[in-house]
Length: 223
Image (cartoon, rainbow, N blue to C red; front, side, top):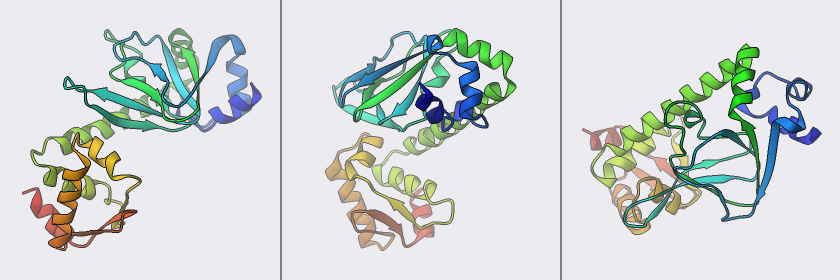
């Protein structure tokens, strides 16, 4: 249990607290810890969400299933991250996607009632939770904005521009399929768009990163 408190110091919900601080407000009876193997369902879409789940070790993916049966990984969660915190409270507290373990994963569940009490008793936890919800709303706003474009070329241009706003000209590419899933496109269609942009000297790709060569040119794609 002591190790769990150490891990939770890296969780944004407990930002600013030490392991000892967290141990003083949580007991073994307050939480439950579950283990999942790769590919195992952690939580199913549309099930009631009565306890906040936090990734302790491993990673998980939010999987959206389209009416056609096609599946798309819309989000990857790492240790310390919260699963769908915005859906824990409110009138419709049901999970929006399936959550699947991407590898051997440990998940801690904090009962909703206890979390509500903690937010009442500790201003820091309340502030952290509000920050988490606000930040995630910003992320989804950017994604919705990107997906509002009609063509895959426009979507990719928006994605690259959005992911290089900090001054860097490179976007890591862990897997082309991951970006294709992000746009609900096929790998081959995305590769075709990348190749077309390379021919116009807007970008270059070596399989590991996509490097922007002409930012103004990418911005023109969106006009």
